[in-house]
Each structure stands twice: as structure tokens, then as C-alpha cells.
Image 1: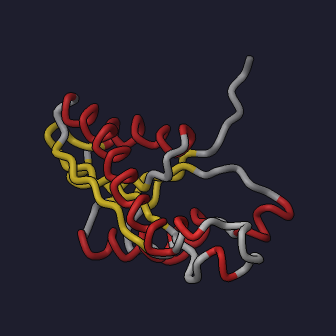
Image 2: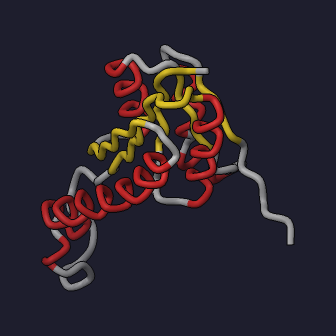
Length: 154
């Protein structure tokens, strides 16, 4: 059993599947750090569209100011269920590029492992968006447990 696990979450049900696996490999009373990375565009969206397409209220700063509390609320919900199961939980939201932020946090916290789900992109979508999981795998300084995406059978 491991003492400290990092679980990146992006708000999707698929990412949350990693929580069950993290609980299985973390010792009773162990620590699970939940991390959400907010990848806010460097420039406000209104800079790319004609006036009126994007309301001024959605400026870059306003977007960041809204996303951080929403992300903390989401993480707090996930943390409560883990705490009820007997784990010590730390939940953090950071702004940055996902893969880099995950690896940096794992290294800084000296976690025993990262447990994360893939999103199952392939082909053009994977080429266009890249794979956060692939980037984490290639640069992490600790073991990475990858939970593959699976389509639910009906």
C-alpha cells in the first residue's frame, strides 16, 4: 500500500474513475491529493472575436475569478467522500498547463504515485489536443497508474 497518491481531476466522470483505484492502493489513513488544473487561455477570448461575440463580462480575469471557486467546490465534494472513507485529503486547484502542473505538483509533494484516467482520444483529436496522460507518463518522476477509458455497456 502507498502512503500518498496524487489524483488529477478535470470534472469529468471519466477522470473520477481514478478515485476508486486510488482508494484501493492507498493505505488506510493515507493521503490523497486531488488536483484540478485550470488551463485558462493566455489571452481573453474577446481578443480573437469581433466585438459583441464575447461579452465583456467574460474577460480573462473574470473567467479566472469564476473558475477557481467553482473548481474548489467541485474538489471539496470529491474530498468529502474520500475523507468519509478514512483518507487524509488535500484538494488543490492551480492555473497552468495540465501535464506540466501535474508533474510539478507530484514532484513537489513527493507523492508515491499518480493515478489518472485517460480520455480515450485517438486520431486527429489526440494529435490536435495532445494527450495529458502521455505527457505525464513521459516526464513524471514517480509511478503513474493509468486507468483506461471504457465506454459503458448498455
